[in-house]
Every structure is written in structure tokens, then in C-alpha cells.
Image (cartoon, rainbow over all chains, first blue to last red; front, side, top):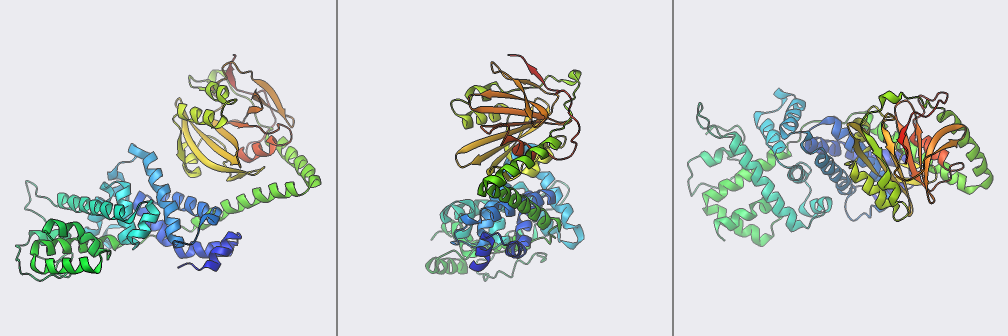
Length: 211
Length: 287
């Protein structure tokens, strides 16, 4: 949590305080913008715009949310508007390809690449919701502050986004004419023969586990 | 609860957003329902995969770029407020601005009439609407050319051939509200909306080879410092145009052409390329 003194110093235009706020949030901010847009140059441009707006309008920050949530609100809205403006100028496949390129292949598992390719197929709004929740760990209330929605709406939209992502992963691992039915590691559990009395354990379906 | 009802709230459970009563119901259900427990595991795995954030390095240029913009804004604001603080200082500053203006607006007015392309910038709707509602007229003009809001960085990328600046704060205290990218025929254009309290100021940048049309409004040559531009007055509004080798810089405002506009123009016309003045290369239709 950013302390009030730091924000107060930023209000007075203290450059050192601004840099402290930047340093404590820029990794997360850049990462989420990169994952929403799929391009480093866009993430860089949008990050610059978000911080500039935040520092020049910091008087509007009322301290009811965390500084990061407030900054996210500026940045994510800016990113969504940017992607709407881009419209069809960039296809989802280009986004996915860009994300895959940046990840550097071998350092990441196939599962990770698939997740990001599937993420790129979602709408930018769905992508932002999932990343705010699972990458950044924001709760429904904070996501609501970022997206200007009540927590109930956040919950139902997250449900939809999650389901769409699962459907996409299932589809990408669906059967083809030449190959037997491959199963995405995340979804392997559904292809196992179910046993009604099997114990519930989140550790059973580890990515990569053989069936 | 039915399986369908349980599956609707499994996301809440995984996200730790379910009430303790609901958690109890979910846990009791999945303990005896294998399909729902599978669903729960899938959601958990999905959440874990999404949480695995890629390792990205923030470019070192990011803070530098932010700092430069903050510095530029501070300079513009302190310049404005220092001018306000002292009438003497104001007079001196005005002289300095005019001197700077002389350098800045020594721009080549040259342009080959044969370069004119079919695209015409038609300012008629903008000029016609000024007396009623300048902001609405500007919006209409933006719509006419398919303007969409953009960041300054996007604007630069949209029109790399144009030379312009869109500072956050203009001399006189106008704050940048919105940047637009637009198209004049095949040529890209950029615009900006500024406000000082309730007062509006608009800027438009387009390629100088485009033709301009002002409807029934009279276009006249104007001198800013010793440099030639042209302006279209409508009531107390003026649309001033200054052109360099690549760009026509149009500013719509109620500012005084002698005492206020030079500083504003110097802020939106980049310093590079200032040379001795030649005849204005604009091609505009006679009313």
C-alpha cells in the first residue's frame, strides 16, 4: 500500500516521490499492459500515458482505493480505448503471435503458450478482467473500481470470460482427422474416467501430468 | 443446490469471493459430486496458469519519457504563472515570445501548386458554427474527417510526416484534453482540443499541399511578428494557419494575434526547420 505521505509529496510535484511511486508499480503496470495489448511498443506508449495522466491528475486520487488500482483504472481504460480504435487493424492472431514471440519459446511451457494464444482470442475487456484477477490478484471490488462496474457484474463477466477461455483451450486441443484426441493439460481431468467418489484435490490435475 | 447452481459459483469460490455459508455448500457438494469437483479443479488450474505472468522488462526509456513530459509541463505552467505575476515580466515575456516567434515562423511558405492533391480541407462547417457553439462546431469538423481520440504517441505514429507538438499545457494555461487522429483524403492529420476553464482552443495539423476551403468566410494574410500566415476571422474567433515545409499548423482561438497567439503557435510548431519566409504555399478556394 502506497503511503499517504508519498502521494502528498507527489501532489506537490516532488519528482523523487513520483519516481518512488513509478518504481513500485511500473513492473506490474507494464506487464499487464503488455499482456492486454500483446505488443511491447503499445505497452510502452500506454504506460507513459498512464503515468503522465496519473501524476498530472493526482489531485483526483482520493485514497479510497490503492494507488495501483487507481493507476490501473487509468491505464486499462486507456488500453481498451486504444484497442477499440485499432479495431480490425490488428487481428487476434497477430496479438497471439506477438505474445508468443516475446516469451522466447523454450523458457515457457506449451501450456503457457496455449494460454496466451487463447487469451489473445478473447475480447480485450475479457482479457483485462482475467489478468486483473489472476495475474494481479485484484479482488472483485478493486476490479469494479478499475472497470467502473459493481462487483456482481465483475463476477458474472469473469465467469463468462473464464468459460470462453476454457472453451478456446478445449477447441485448440480438440480431435483432428490425423491425430487421436489430445487433451490440454489443464483439461485432462475431464477426459479421465470419472469416479463419483474420487476425492477433491486441486493437486490432481497438475499441468503435464500423464493420464 | 443443483450441479448447475454450484458450477455458477465455483469461480467465486476459487476467487475467495464466496461467503462462508456458500463455501460450506460448495465444499459439501463437490465432496460427493465428481463432475463438479473436476470443474473446480479445472478452474483452479486455469487460474494458476493465468497467474504465471510472463517475465517482462520495463524499458529504461519509460521513466525518462515520463519525466520529460512532466518537465515540459512544468516549464509551460511556470512560464504562464510567472507572466501573470508581474505586468512588467509579462511585457518582457511577450517580447521574448515574439522574438522566439520571429525565429520560429521564419518558415518556408514555399509549395508547388502542382503538388495540390484532390483532398481538400473544408473548414466551412467549422467556421459556420463558431458563432453558435465553437466546441460543437469543432466536434462536427472532427466527425467530418473521421477523427478518433488517440494518445500523443499514436498521433505521431499516425502522421510521421507532419511536424507538430501537442504539449500538455500551452502558454496561457490551456490544458490538453483530447488528441485526435483523422484523415484528409489519403493524407493523415492530427488535431487537439485544449481548454482553459470554460475557454476552448483547437489545433489541427495537416499536410500543406492540401487545398483549403472556407465557404463564404474571408481569408486574409496575417503577420505574426514579421512572418506571414493567413487567418480567417469569424466574430471574435480566428482560425490562423502557419505552414512549414511539411505541415500546416491551424489554431482556432479567441486569442490576440499579436500578444497571445505567437506563444501558442511556438508551442505547437516544432523548432526544427525554421528558415527565411517565402510566400505561403496554401491553396485555398475563393469564397
